[in-house]
Picture 1 (spheres, helix red, strand yellow):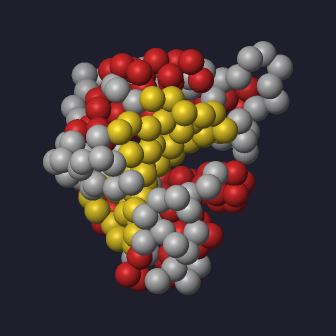
Picture 2: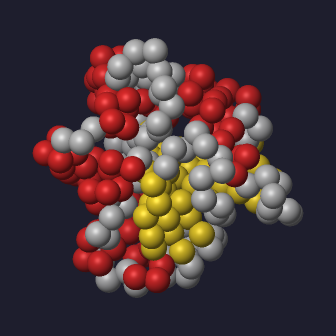
Picture 3: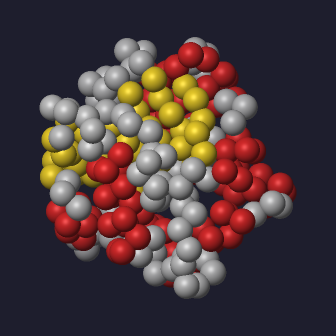
Length: 230
């Protein structure tokens, strides 16, 4: 998801350097399967029709964005943004083509989401299964990068959707899976982890975003919406 150097060698660092087509195919397939599982409920649970342009940061094959563009035909354009090794493997657009989304409504762009000069300008951004792979410091950098990418826009409202397994108060049916993923993130990443709503709110506040709403969809993902006005 990012080309930023880290002290330890984790899964995301591996992806920035990976030339193994078989590994990339397995990884991309796994990410797509996770999106298929939850995508329909997430798309139905949020009104994306209010946006003209959407960027799916770390969007892999783009299946989630394709589902959104299929349902909300008024959206003018969508961009899948991911690391170069991933984009080079998935940019044939099969998820969009299979859903009959017009070719002039989507594209793939490769780069580092920490480089705000490369992050595409848009009305809305999706961070699906991204921030849980990062430590707090890198999460702050990602959220800041999106803001900086839009600094030249005037009188505009920018919206971000964080799609993750949220840790809910004890008793929530989705927590068992969230805790399992939390342990996996501890092993696979550089201090990445699952977070509570309030931990995400803290990250958003520190980077100038205003928390708007939690969509407790538990599909098993839930969604946090935040905004800033530029």
